[in-house]
Amino acid sequence: MDDEVFRALADPSRRRLLDRLNQQNGQTLRELCAGLEMARQSVSKHLAVLEGANLVTTAWRGREKLHYLNAEPINAIADRWITQYDRRRVQFFADLKNSLEEETMSDNDFVYTTYIKTTPERLWQVLTDPEFTQQYWGVTHDTDWKVGSPMEWKMGEVTMAGPGQVVLEHDPYRRLAFTWHHITPEFARATEMDDELRDKLAAEPLSQASFDLEPVGDQVKLTVIHTGFEPGSALRALIEDGWTRLISDLKTFAESLPADPSQPNAPEPEPAEA
Image 1 (cartoon, rainbow, N blue to C red):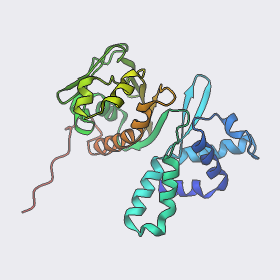
Image 2: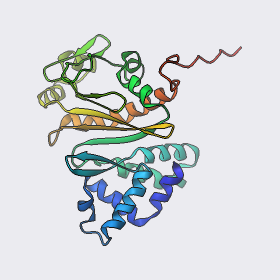
Image 3: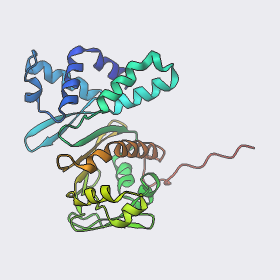
C-alpha cells in the first residue's frame, strides 16, 4: 500500500486535489472541478487513483457523492518511516501528516477509512459483541441491536443512557449506525471532565456514528463516519484523536483474531521464556 500512496502523491494535480479537500472536506466532483484547469474526466481519474491509495474516501448524501480526505495512509507512512530514520531526513512526512490532520473536516464530519485483514463476519462481531468491545474500546453496548432500540453504554461502573440514544441502522456484515452517547454526570465524573466542558457537551444534540463494511479481497474496507455536529461543537473538537486511536486499536485487535468467528476468540498466549 505504501507504493500506491507514494505514486498517488507524486502527481502535482493529485496533491492539489488533496489540498482542496484539506481546505474544504466533503466536496462533490463538480465542486472539485470548479477553478481547476483540468477536464472533469481528468479530475475523476485522479480521484480514482487517490481513492485506490486510500487517500480519499467517499460517502453518498442523497444523490451526491462526497469526497473526503483520509489521513490514515499518511499516519501509517509517517509512523513507519519516522520511527526508523533520522527525523530531519523525513521531516516532509511529518509536515504532510500534520497538514492533513489539521482542520481537515471543514464541514464538521469525521470520516476515516482503513483496511482490516479479516472477514466482514468477524469484524461485525468485533463491533457488536460486548466481549470484544470491552477489550479494545473499554465499553459495552447494552442493546438488542434492533433499529429504534435504546442503547446503554457501559464503561466500568458508569452507564450512559438517555432519550434518543438508539440504534439507527443494523444491516449485518454491511452497515451499523447509532446515535452518539449522552454526556451524563457520572460519565463526566469518571473522566474528570470540568463543569464548563460538561455543560457545553450536555447542551449539544446527539450526533450519529456509522460503520460501513465492504469486503476487498482478504480484507474489509471499514469507513467510520461521525456526523451531526453543530457549528463550533465542543464534542467535534474532542473526537478526532479519540476516533483515530480507537480505529487503530480496533484494527490491531481484529487482525489478532482468527478470521472465522466459529474459531476461538483470541490467539493462544505466547509461552513464557525460561
